[in-house]
Image 1 (tube, rainbow over the protein chains, first blue to last red):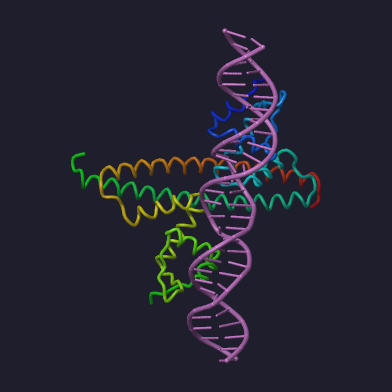
Image 2: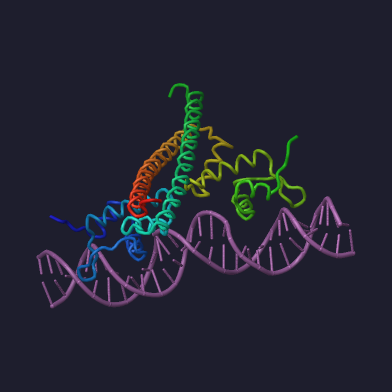
Length: 128
Length: 128
DNA sequence: GGGTGATTTGACTTTTACGTCAAGGTCAAT
DNA sequence: ATTGACCTTGACGTAAAAGTCAAATCACCC
């Protein structure tokens, strides 16, 4: 079937604006086909957008996302480049692990807040 | 002992600029004491800064961080407010859980990239 | 074949979270 | 008293990631 998606289909699905998707194209993150001037998104574009948005949610910049995409599209062939890439991967891993710790701590805090709310509610509206 | 910290002590400890800490004060996130015009940070300020930076790392905006701080400083007393707060807590929890999933998926991807690098390296520089 | 609604490009604007001067105050040590 | 380190306010600048708006074009349907 090889269905094509229009830009607004994808904006609705992912909750982003058309401006955002065009911006990602301008930035070289996606390359939808064209029929005339209108963009036609394939499955692969759709998946790529999902990855981009995932990166965005965890705070990657466009440049970082582009870099990751590049690696997938065109992995380096030279040993030095490979080592460099591995170092960067290691750094990213550290960063993400830190972020996970931060998230876990914050989730704990949220639990505390919630419990405090519940006790408070129990005190106030004794018969809720 | 009740030690005071100077602004640069804290900037060095946390790896942020003085501008950043003054910005946080302008935004009402911290309220260091003053001796004359110079800021004196107490332990409580230090801890608060840690929390702020943790929030920052996981992508909270200044406004969100301020809101969280507010809740700690001055928890709402009215039932409706409490319920509202709990709803927002629940939303934040969802958001953070999503972020955790995103991070885990990205960590998996990083592992793939690393493995690909290793195989590639083994192929190329057979005797590294 | 004209209207309607979706798309496109391009330019300009906005928001967030600081960075970067400029211009000077404070204080301890020399 | 001067130097040097550190601190202050205030104004202006900037980069990233879109938002907004205008004008033009396109596809489609009756």
